[in-house]
Image (spheres, rainbow, N blue to C red):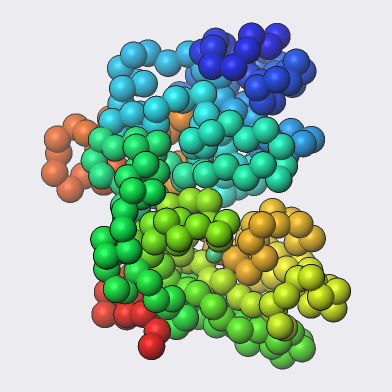
Length: 303
Ligand SMILES: [Zn+2]
């Protein structure tokens, strides 16, 4: 049963305006399960590529907690990005209405330039109002060194690139580690390059790669890039991820390696972590997941 946009009821909708609900009774109940391992019903996207936004009834305390700790203004715009093992709770500041209607999405619990208590909507307004001089010089320069990545995964990225080149792909690394300030700078700069302020680049677990001449309007470049993206997703135990599908994306170059210990799988997990991090026990649980970087190389931009 569809009850309309913005109505917080015990019902899932594929999107606002969609009269069809795939929800089953058992699926509805799982939204309220205390288990972090249960698959919530707000996972994945519908046939049009629109997220299954959550429609869950939350207590006032839980809503306030999500807002205070994780910047969630409207829990009805939370969803889980996919149904794979590394599913992540995300938040859209606008309802996405079609596959190519790109909206800004944020990974809940990822570190960023968001201030304590600031909502994602307020952060977007703050970033939009910034001036160039408000960004540190390092935010304006790309880091292209593989050494700037999380030391736990840098060798795997190195192998990915070496093996890809050995197979004949012409690859150029355009970006590796990005500080949260650089993420903010790229969103401020615009141009559709990024739709988020939370990224695995800021954990040193993502790179941007250019294939060939980088121009996807050239048929041969596009072919090579699609072939490379297909190969990436099958390489090394299928652990590497690209955005969208190998054939269709708004970000051709992005490759990431999710971490099992980064991000939250459900709304209930977010509430539970928020409670723990707010409990007052110093050092017990940080609200946002901290990155594991070598500070001596991570902050140094390429010349
Ligand atoms: Zn990227």
